[in-house]
Image (tube, rainbow, N blue to C red; front, side, top):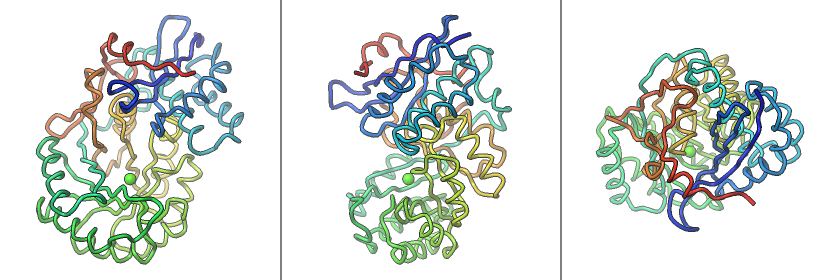
Length: 369
Ligand code: CA
């Protein structure tokens, strides 16, 4: 079996140029099968999709799709000077996810079976609620209340998403919001606090101590992601579990975070070598006794790839991320990342197990120049 066609494209969730877009790739074989993969959607994923089209597609044609790990290493090492982080990693992830989807269809098995089997076929979700730097205390509480009622999550993470050029902007205000959300949801509700890199080490210590008092479970990306030692210092000095890694693109980078002292890592399947890369991270995390809790914000292909992979983790310690705006995928996909009673069900059909409306997919496709 050979790869005969590689088609990177954007899928417009909305209407016209302003709609948010998914960055997808469709890989076809000479036996009439196809697989779908997804890249990180930053800036519409155009940089990753351009790399697939101009730097990867010609090399992929004629390859055996079952050789996905060899293909990934060859492309990574050929193009390493375009990366190794960022857009290149997104392109590699998209190709890898599409090849795993194809592998499942070729072998007639769902992806989780090919990864060694599922420990669970139903996974709880956590509501990841962004933009709270820009809300006051009451607005924050109202948004959390709405999402909890709608999604029935097993946990909630409040994200800050502040101005990345500033740190320690409003520590008392941030603590007040964390306190109000605790009061809203009660003492037993599992809560995470995502600083989105908003603090200095000193600021992070102050907020982290407050979160400990409030019984929060984890404190995400307290300082700049590129300050790996500082991230580790905060993780080691605080009692609360500190997490990081959504802006880490290689298994070596994840290992650096663990060596610095981080004990919960969050690589993202669309930035991190896809399923192949995330499985490598899972092995490293397990070897170190570190929790793997992937970052995941995309509501269709990446979501399915993520839950197939997470179903295979024995010591899965946290629910699966469900980010803002997941409803957008239901315009095309019949099984978007919509939780039912707070849970996702693992597909059992071959490959990733997506179902979509062919007409809507075609209508919303944007070709890559
Ligand atoms: Ca985050």
